[in-house]
Length: 132
Length: 292
Image 1 (cartoon, helix red, strand yellow):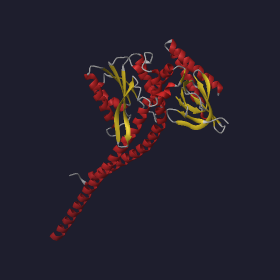
Image 2: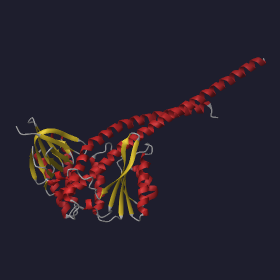
Image 3: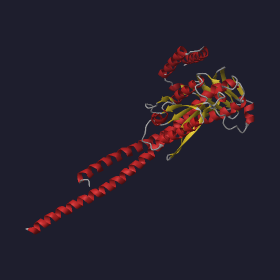
């Protein structure tokens, strides 16, 4: 069995999860990555997506995160999410509202850089919604 | 001398007031507990954020390519003060304390010949500052109908601040709020938001040296800084809610006690007067009977 490490999922409002896990799949900005024990210290930003947490006993949990970043240290891994919800608790209406907001952002963007950023965010959201 | 009926009315009205203040105190106590829990729940995030920030700030250093939010505009001419207060009164000196603290700051800045802009968060602070500095207040944000402070509220404020900064609206931004020390003590605090202070250097600087950054450290920092500002504002708002409830609780406790004392005094004079009247009537009857 694989070694385990500490994983914490924190949103500004509360600590969602603090557990010993064997692997975590993170939707990094530059691509999905799987973190296992003894990962090199890394810091990365994340895009909206699904985080899969496999606990030490093999049970897996899925969380939806909307942006944030991950801090991987030898002692453990911390995910600071802008907002996070367990997949089971996800509110379709909330998601639809976020999509709507993102679409408006794209429409409202005044310069190209902002537009591109908003578009990217919208794309991530759409992919995520499809995945759920 | 008020008549017996007047006294009775007054006692009744003070009693009614006491009931209200007592209820408000209990509501504040319940809300305080909730607010404290919220503040506590938000703590891990802000702590980690601070640790990561100082880590990454070290890695990037104060180089030329560091984002403007961190280095500032290089000037010190225009100051933006974000003054966070409560939405409601009835909480002792809580709001005026923050407002006074901010006012002193404004006065000092104006004396130094700086331009000052004020962004009011919360209705009460706006009401107080408007009297003196109405022309300096550029915007106000109200959370009147917000039941529970959430990150979204902090985001609205932060977006306003950062939007202004991007337009070159100010050089230095300071956040004013009340730090929650305990139920009876809230300390008005000023905290510099922009340019972001790197915070105390991490003891083990070597740990940051071997970090892998994905994408680059600069890009992460750029992404992180706005977030860190949001978190700081969020924390300030939470502290404020807890402080407001604490202040309200003790103010209402005092009010309830004062009402109790007043009732005691009034009942005392009511009883005296009633007794005096009875004695007077008795004397009248007796002397009337004797005269026969």
